[in-house]
Length: 103
Image (cartoon, rainbow, N blue to C red; front, side, top):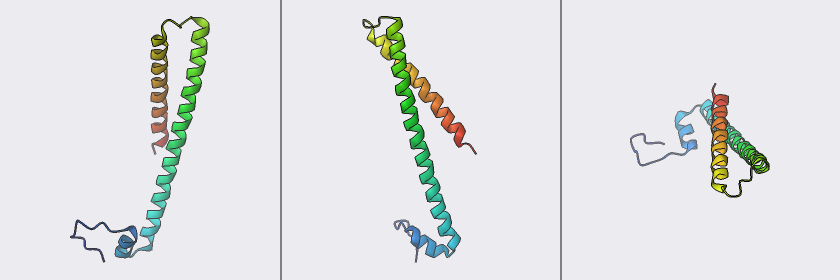
């Protein structure tokens, strides 16, 4: 039995389910757990996809800039441009992710 007054004891989910004595509670807990796993998988896939977009965009940008301008002397400018471009892609990706999760 759970002692609600004892703050030092952390009951397990099974103990809480026995205390509540409602089978719907345990079903709700398992559904919440699977929903959380689904959210984590979606977020991971979104981050990986954004990383691939950043890599592809960086590769294309380097080729285009190198073909248009000889930037060998000022590599800092190229790195700053790539950092700004990837920051912009990351920001847009973050906003799209947040908008897709609003319900």
